[in-house]
Image (cartoon, rainbow, N blue to C red; front, side, top):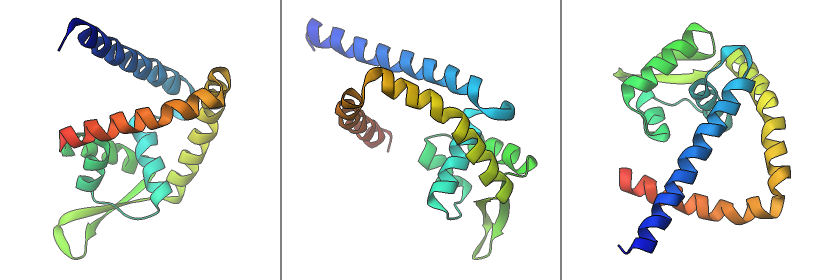
Amino acid sequence: MDRTTHALAVTLFSEILTADQLVRNRLSRVLPGGMEISHFSVLNHLARFGVERSPAQLARSFHVTRGAMTNTLHRLEAQGHVHIRPDWEDARRKMVAISPAGLRARDEALAAVTPMVTELVGDLGEDKVRAVLPILRELRLRLEDDSA
């Protein structure tokens, strides 16, 4: 790798990591009731797809360990936001579904973060956001391929 390519790679990942940290900080400030980003992410995922998922499936979807996902799910269950039940076909597994309270919490969180995200898109301009999405998507897909 030549110096120019190396510098470009370092700059790209520096910008991505810094943007990630800044977005997480902003999201943490606007999420309601002390909700964590990981909680919102799981609730949003379950609400969008509308089907039960196993903790292992969720861990794979979020690229986290099963232990980390189990911790998040236990906290969401304690708050009444998810239901965790045994898998009737395989007693070793559990299945997770979003509860009505979880749907309300997700909707409340979505309502809280939408103005911030909408403002960012407005500040950047819709054309720039549309232009960068395919690049970010390709980068994500390549990184997911590497993690398999």
